[in-house]
Length: 461
Image (tube, rainbow, N blue to C red; front, top):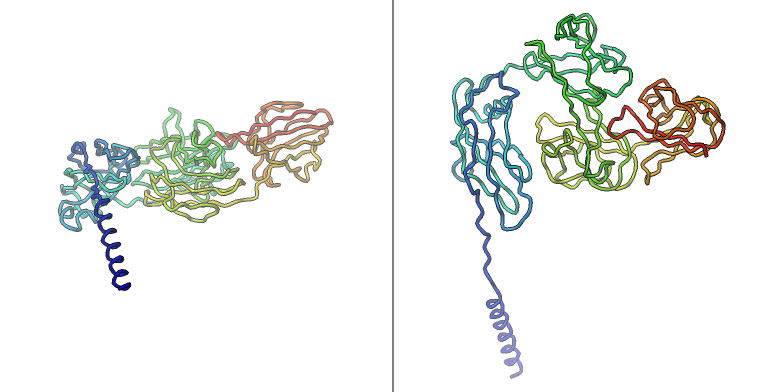
C-alpha cells in the first residue's frame, strides 16, 4: 500500500509540474526588421580607367535600420555578380567592405572598384553587372534589396619602382632618404614625419643619389633639374604624392594617432604617432595609463581600427580591424612603444605594444654629471611631466632621452635663468643657460601635438 501511495504522489507531482510549465510558457518572436527604403548607388553606370583611379566613382547610401532596441548598428557593403546572389549559397563569394557603426553611406575609389571587379570575374573593357546590397547587424543580420550597377573595368598596368626624397630632415643624405612607392604607372606616394629643426626643404630623386633630381624651376613649377627646393608646410606628418606623368606633386597632412583612456588625450583628442620611414611603420613612444587604446586616421572616426578579441598588455604583430568597436587594453601605467601599419588588405592592420625603458635626463656643465653623464629626471604621473629638483651651477643645460644623443632637445634662442613654459626643439644644438648656482626645480614634457618641440620650466628655489 505504501508503495502504491508513493507512486501516486510522484505521478501527481510530475503532472503538476507539467501543468505549471504549460501555464507559464509564452512563445516569443523576433520583431520583423527591414530597410525602410531602397538603397541607392550613384551613378549606376561606371567606366573605369586610370583617370579616375583616385576619384570616388560610386556612392552608395541608405536609410537607417531601426531595431527593436536602441543600440549601435554596424553596416557592411556587399558586392557580387548577379549569378552568385541566389540560392542557399547566395552572396557567399561577395566582396564585403566594412562601412562602420551608424554610417549611412560609403564611396568607392576607381582603383578599388577595378580590383573588386577583377576579383568577381568581370572581363576588362567589357561592361558587366555588379549587384550591391547593404548588410545591417545588431543582434542579427538584416539585408537590403540589391541594386544593379553597370561597370566597365580595365586592365591595370603593373606599377613598380620608387622615388626618394632626401632633404634637410636627414642631412640631405640621398642614400638613406625616405621612399615614395609606385601606386600607379608614373605615380608615387609615401609618408614622412618632419620634426627636425634643421629645415623643411627636400628634393625628389629617381635613385638614391643626386645624379638626377626634381625640384622647382625658376617659374616655381615642379621640373627635372629644378634648382629650387620643395618644402613641407610645417613640422608634422604628411602624405607626399608625385605624378611624373604630368610633373605635379601634392603634400597633405596625414597622421595616424592613438586614442582612448590610456592615451594622453583620452577619448577627446588623438595623440599623434610619427612615421618611421626606415621600418615603414607609425610609432608612438611615451607614457600610457591603464585603459583602452584604438587607432584612427587624421583625428577623425571615419577611418579607425580596433581589436576583435580583447587584446591586452604587451603584444607583437597583433591584428586590428577596420571600424571594429573593440580596443586594445593597457594593463599597467608605464612607458610603451606602439607600432602600427595598415596591411595590403586595408580591412586589417598590424600593431605591436611593448613596454620600453624610457627616461629623460638633464645634461650639460650646469648639471651634476656635466657633459659626461645624464642626471636622471623623475616622471610625475599626476602632472604628466618629468621633474628634477637639485643643485645646478652656472652653465649649459639640455634634455636627452635614455642617456643617448639620438633624441635630445635644446633651445633656439639662448634662454637663460628662471623660465616658465619655455620651448625646446628636437635636435637643436642650443642649450638653456643657468646663470646662478643654487637649488632648482626643472620640469620637462614633449609637446603631444608636435614632437618637434618640448615645454620646460626652470625655477630657482
